[in-house]
Length: 447
Image (cartoon, rainbow, N blue to C red; front, side):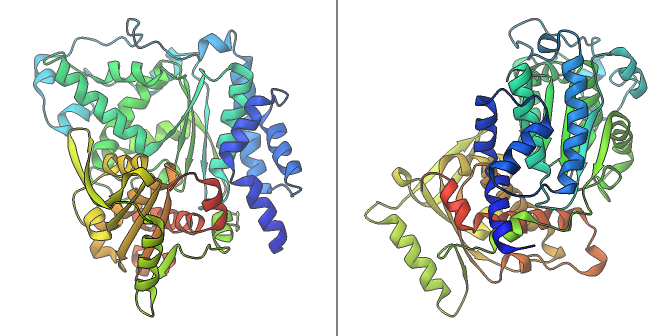
């Protein structure tokens, strides 16, 4: 594809925040296709056939939602202060006393119902859309257009968007808080489900993936409850449903949830798209954001740090999240910048909550000593994936000193090429390419 065309296309495709803002101001776009056409015409670019396939499925869903009698009230958020709309039978003493993840999340006669019965119990629960494809093909872009268009038609209190990492983190935190405040009260999940609907019953999940056993064991009950309350979902993922949680611990307990996804959603395959917009975007790499060890890279990385710090005072500090301390060895708080050794972040027991706190506290992150990783380092790889996801969602700038270019950070043997980490890291590589670009630096703020 022609370079000038790609530059123009990427300018229009990747400014999703401004896209959503524009569409919310302009209420004359009642369909996703019209919203998509607006963006294409504004950027003087051609439409992408694979994105159009996703747009068509999302328009069908939008039509079904808007055609629902009293749609604005049916899909409006549930007030947490009101009595719970989620009815739950009293938990048995054995359930109340259960403390392990397995006993809390596994299916039991008192806590799970037939999957098919849920579909018949809630006529307002419409089939959703599950979009899967390679990194950078425009899945999130299409989802953002759907969210913005529907918001302009029904109002913003009917539709919400969640990054899946962040969403599951909040679910576990809400369950923990409920049990802490209500000891012996039984199953916390119905109360959690009610609170999740406060911002609207149409929920868009971006970057849907399952790598954690605690998430895998709870998902069927969680989504069954949400479906039962009339929620509708849009998913984006770089995994087709049948490949979710592939090779995961106790996957047999997760497989019924795959059946739920396939039954309750139109599945849109975008894998034939051979354009990674973020990768092409990243070809226009800004100077001074990615350095290689040796041949002066260390010195240039240090000079950029010193230049950004300027006359600011470098101090260590401690952030607090969910009862945990996150130590920041070097930061200039007033400038919103911090510097970390890779192993301090990814070589230790840290998770999404820690990384999101860092991303929310600083606008520019310097990361050094990024190594070449292999499958034996899989836990480190997972943390690095989660770190980049968090910084990307927080729209942070990032300056990196590494052993190799982004595409070489995770070396995968042929037999491991289909593992979850390899798929997830492909997205990480793509996001790093985008975060290294001049366009990213221009559109992010601060730091």
